[in-house]
Image (cartoon, rainbow, N blue to C red):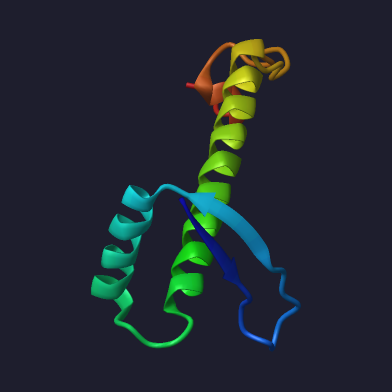
Length: 94
């Protein structure tokens, strides 16, 4: 296992997170980060932040979808029909 410590850009309030990640995942992740962003300073943290934001967004979208499905299963009360024919809506007599 490899331990990472990362502190983001100083323009924002930042947190330092210490995590343990398997060597295999670490190696694969670093290769992808290098391919995507290069080897400049801070790219690993940027990639981890991006991955975390993506994961959070994905979970929030799942929660929204679940909540909307539950609402649609309940059904909607749209009121009662106040007209017999479409023309009645426009007060047209044919």
